[in-house]
Image 1 (cartoon, rainbow, N blue to C red):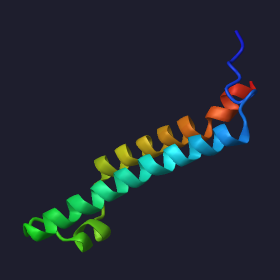
Image 2 (spheres, rainbow, N blue to C red):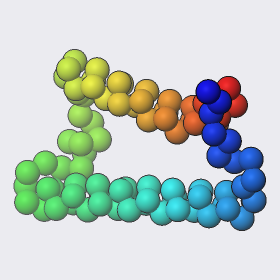
Image 3 (tube, rainbow, N blue to C red):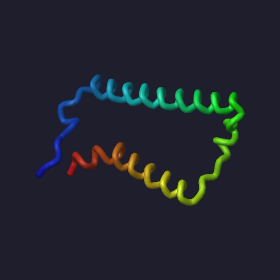
Image 4 (cartoon, helix red, strand yellow):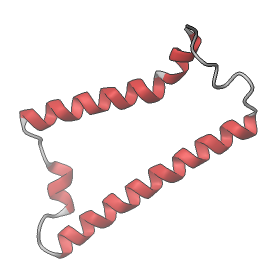
Length: 84
């Protein structure tokens, strides 16, 4: 069974729209995280520095590494999966 060729007929404009849409979604997430950090700081729950300087415990660190690898594989591995 061959993999689908997602980009075989893609134009530069279509690829640019895809990157722009991903960038917009990334900005929405960053905007919301920054807003949540500020809300938490304003409520004296945690400061932005607390978040920036946080050292995750071993279990969270392992979970973050697994999730990071999953995202990297899914996003950056997509073209490789099609090429097979």
